[in-house]
Image 1 (spheres, rainbow, N blue to C red):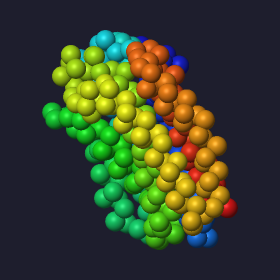
Image 2 (cartoon, rainbow, N blue to C red):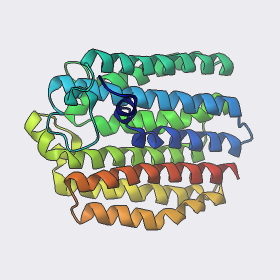
Image 3 (cartoon, helix red, strand yellow):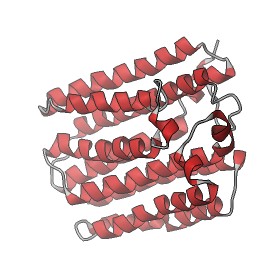
Image 4 (tube, rainbow, N blue to C red):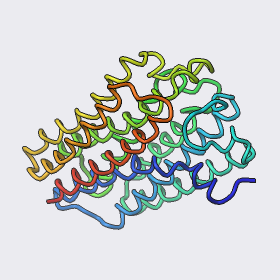
Length: 289
């Protein structure tokens, strides 16, 4: 039976910045037009974190029962390691999804935008079918598309919309930027797993592109968001503060381009998550100022 620390590790806390960063930008965009709501921001943050945890447990369960995690190099996987039964991990996933659904209902009740329930249902479905079901889209090379849409556009613009009842250009540029970095986290993860994913029939985008091109795409996903922050400065000059990330971006890009692989990519994966968090905070505060 898995211990508490193992369940926490199974939730993959290093991925949680991918959930928080877009909320910071969305809230900053709302503050930029004087519509910041602290309660709705906190609720959106809690929803995003719960959904991310649900995704992580769902992937643990689905990859585990499919056998694609048996030779995995990365973080602890409860199902594949036999530390928890598949049923228990699946229950943990749907518990997290349930919490996110409750938070979503509270948000739409407070904001009055009841049609957003349909968006919430789509988010949970996308989280489950990334690796779940008979034809998971993550196994077909579409994982980055799902991450960009739901952990970039939806999370950022949704946070802005529930507070301001509108979407702005700065919010949209920030959503694209943070969505690309979220994709970079997944790309780093999948570059690391190319050998095992190929053998198990999991055709991620990294597998389809090949290692060389996948590494080049990762670098683009790291650098383009900084360019978008420069463009956003036409509306909010303080978003130029994100340029302090030039050095971390250079280090991450160099690490991936020189060909680090296997376990050496695990620190890169964690650092990319922190890079996204820093980007979200700096961009969001820049918009608010």
